[in-house]
Length: 304
Ligand SMILES: *Cc1c(COP(=O)(O)O)cnc(C)c1O
Image (cartoon, rainbow, N blue to C red; front, side):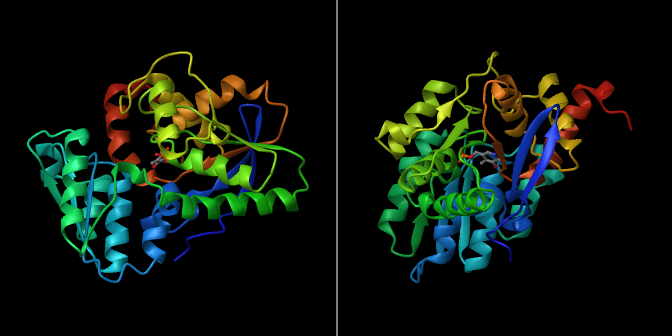
């Protein structure tokens, strides 16, 4: 199972020279930044654990990664979601289908939000010795362990290339990956700057996430603000166009995070007078559920 040391490829996309860190080439069942964030739970002993509790969206990339983690460790995964659409129950696909196949127990609540579920599940796990709670999207201090290894791989590549500086760009959900990357580069005393954009909740939400994970603002990545406000998980014409442009590099990108990441990076690329690395954070199995939605909404943008 490949869980580290992914290659870096050079591509020119829409006239932007990019080094792409292919973290999508980690093992398909445990790929991208979730593999990095969950590496701690895979590698530490946790001998007494039998069950892991998680929550989030029914099509989240982290659902499938958690299911794979639980399967690899022989744990039961109980994953709580707000709602399971009837059509998905009847015809499972994407991350949901893969998680079911990996043995995940996916539990629909009666519409409870993440803010309600998180303290409940944390308390439940605290009461039982054999039970471990992992917050939504792997937003935990434990994520630093695996993200640090990613930072070390990038640093090693940077040394080999004999670069004097570098901007590492990656779109953020919880911001956990971006934050711990920047923190790692800072502690290595390297002039590598992490830039990101808020895909899920806006810049203020992202800044709050950063503060929760690390109070020292000199460890915080630089946030690029999109020119337009987008809602997470919605289908936008410019997102599909951005995704198709990225894919022309011969690599499949992810449809929830990468389109806005690419739009934001392009908006500032001309001002960055440094080599740029884009971190491909995996998650492409989720495209199985996103693509049909795009096809229905913008049939004219699909030529075949
Ligand atoms: C989860 C995920 C992200 C967001 O990662 P954070 O660490 O929460 O910021 C970005 N891209 C992809 C493909 C993901 O699966």
